[in-house]
Length: 231
Length: 231
DNA sequence: TTATCAATCAATCGCATGATTGAATATGAA
DNA sequence: TTCATATTCAATCATGCGATTGATTGATAA
Image (tube, rainbow over all chains, first blue to last red; front, side):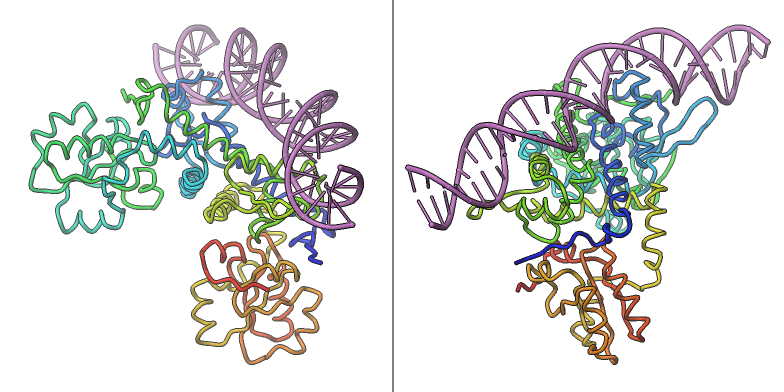
């Protein structure tokens, strides 16, 4: 007869240190467990934001946003600092984007609805031959690749990959006239579920460019500790 | 004035595919957001289990366990199969332990209470010079390291690292008399918050052995797709 | 000081979740 | 078929969470 022992931490003797650990981990997971909070975290992946900016961007009432942010803070996922009248929220740790990525990964593989959403909205994902971080670093140095940042100006200004040009989607048609046709183009945006760079690559290819997509977005780049250019 | 655009998925136009994605991710995160469910997931990291075994191990009422398991299943974290009268639950995906590890990592770095719990219960963590998977693989081949599996017999029987000897904590004193003193010893157990191998390494060192700890436990090894020996 | 603005707090409501109990399925054995 | 066993389902209750509103704190600027 197989017997499974109670515990690896001897909860029998010590009250329950493991219980308390799990309680903490569960609290952190619950902090992740809300649509709006995931949205806020995604925005914070781009960089520090004020409560006001976050509320405006996500279309939530101000007080509501504030409360969600506080839950994220209690959950250890974000941190704050004060700057004049504003309170700036940021991700608490470089490992947070990794946690979100792990969540996405498991969801993409095991939740049918997620698979379907991705299939309908990111169909071309597999066809765009994404460029990895490592490859990009090498090719930027060796091959003179042109790097496009498809995010809105404000986010670009707050930080972008070194040497990237900011081309917002509505500037793309104009850019197509001026971009060099003899060099390969790599586009990126916010990462994960941001389609801006997908669309850019598709449009560029339709116009005859050699274009590819950076596999990840700005937050992952930054979280990996790679150089970021400001202004 | 900085303006942040609404969205990378144009929720303005398309209703809200991103919203639905986040809703799914949030649902998965909520499934992680309960002490008992994390406990169940940890057990399932060792291998398939029946509802009964899980309930017994975690000391929860049967029906309660069943309900938590169903939430985990809805959340895409576990899967089931039927075997005779029993229903066997398992982790749905090799990426699940990675997700749990990411959660632990962020928690260990950002939740003060977790840091404290670890400091008091795993003080020696840093001193035991953990061995990585890669290093272990090499040294098993080259240096004839002795591998100890500190888990209970039942878990050992259900799967263990190739060549590992099963030594439960109460067998350790006896084993100390017979283990070879000229070879290094590496101990492992369930991983993460399982102290069995910590204690073993400490006891072995007190007795003059050269002993180290495998950085991870059995679930991580198995999830990495490495060889597992049964029976 | 006062006025103003950013952000949080407090109170309320409605709804979802977790625990418990007991009944209902479904499978395999007699 | 009938019984026993493993698991799920259904109903209940208490509690906690999320949204909304309006009041409050804290910091800057006039």
